[in-house]
Image 1 (cartoon, rainbow, N blue to C red):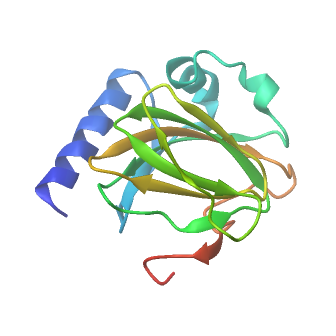
Image 2 (image 1 turned 30 degrees about the vertical axis):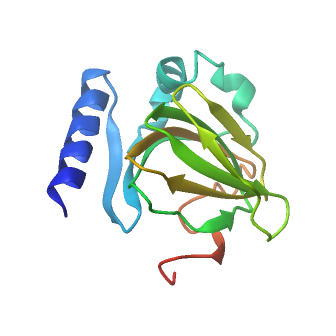
Length: 165
C-alpha cells in the first residue's frame, strides 16, 4: 500500500473513532481505494454526522441500513454497476468526485460533486464513483430493499470494470 493511501486510511479511521463510531469492518485492499463499514446500530448517529440529520426511519425500505465511508483514489473508478437488493444515498465528505448514473447499461454523463453534495441512487440504477484529481471521501448508506435477503458485497452486477472483476 502506498504511503499516501495508508495516511488517508489512518486519518479517516481516527476521524471516525473520534466521532464515536464503531468500525465493523474495513477494506484497504480495493484497487480503487477502499471503505469502512460502521456498526449498524449507529445508523442514526452516522446520518446525523454526514447526512444533515436525515431520519433513518424514513430511509428504511426493507428494514436494515448499512452506513459506510468510501475512499476513492485519484483517477480511479469503481465498476459501472447496479444492485438488485439495495438503493444507496451518497454524500461527499471531502474532495471532489465524479459520478456517472444511468437507468441503462450505457454510462451517463460525468457529474462533478463536492462536499455536502448528496446523490440518491435507486435500486437497479447504474452508477460509478470516480476519483478525480485528488482523494475523495464519500459517506454512503445502503437502503436494503429486501428484508428477508439484505444486500451485501455480492449484490453487485458489474456492467464494466477496469479491474476485470
